[in-house]
Image (cartoon, rainbow, N blue to C red; front, side, top):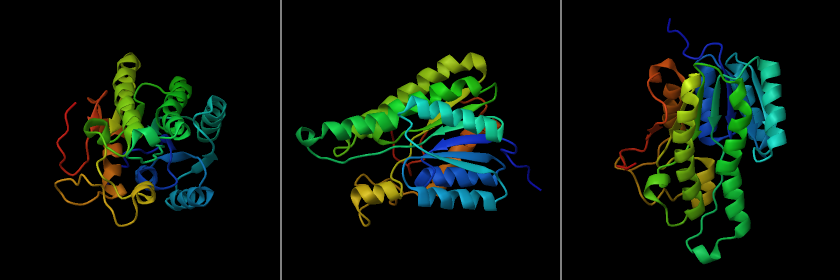
Length: 250
């Protein structure tokens, strides 16, 4: 019988009510982890994810709120530790995007929402969780291939994803002495509810990978699992690129 790779671990993950986050949460639960989920609005899908995790025999608690609110981050972190005993792995996955192919038409509100959700909220939650992490803990951030390639319709979104790469590398340097690893995953085109909502049901990302199809969220989740386990013990400050063969620099 194979040993569960995350047996007894507690994972806090944002944006796990659907998409990549949900696939990561389910895979981690399959590997023995108890899961805490932060979601912003979709209570129906969050409850469904919770039920699926509990069906696997793991504990799951969900929190509705905005990671851009430091008070919410602090209260949620304390509740996770109180109810599940610890936080061993933090997965910063939540994000939004508002496509626009004309910079002059970008709405200030959308720009600020994108930065607040994608990078500022990530930093605030990490700041709150960090004191609870210990040697052997792991932080995994979701960035994107657009951080390296750019995207003509996602100027502000791509900028936040580039910031996530820099945040990951910098925090890895700071966390090294504590034995905490900090890495990121940069998917290419992925079939998720967010991309469907953004670009439509039939349209795949215009810069298709050499594999000529969007990845599934389950295919991306395995990269997160690798970074969460001791198999990646020599990796920190790194970015994995499950993008179907797109060549990126940086």
